[in-house]
Amino acid sequence: MVRIGVAVEGGDGLDDVIASRFGRAPAFLIIDVDQTGNARVVKVIPNTALGMGGGVGVRISKLLADEGCQAVAGPAFGPNAAAILSTLGIKMLVVPPGMRVRDAIRLMLDQLAGRAPPYPPPPPSGPGRGFGRGFGRRRFRHGRQGPP
Image (cartoon, rainbow, N blue to C red; front, top):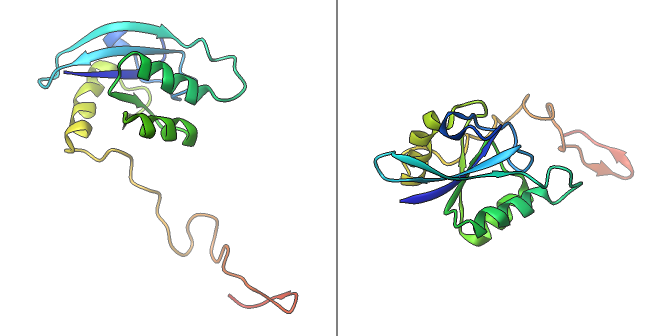
């Protein structure tokens, strides 16, 4: 049995949908899931940190750790929340926003078991991608930009 904290849009239990943001999610479901995918909602926690200016991801990460979560699920994790969760040994599960929690449980279990990648693949890189061709390649010579 694993306890997962899931960022959701409301408090509708397993029929709720994954929130579009982790730290600023309106609520969190605390669910216990067994190896066969049977899930039970333990608690719904409204996000009281929504009005904070910063540090929301860190505060929520600590709250979910205090609830005994061994994993958390959301669409993405900010660098501060990810650092806290990693330090606490809590696994981060990336699930698409808008997916029903009931439907996301199998994806979460697959990520925990290593059958699915834990994060979405990185964006493509190379010439012509990202910030544009040649970004960061120019060097300064004698106060002027030289060729790449």
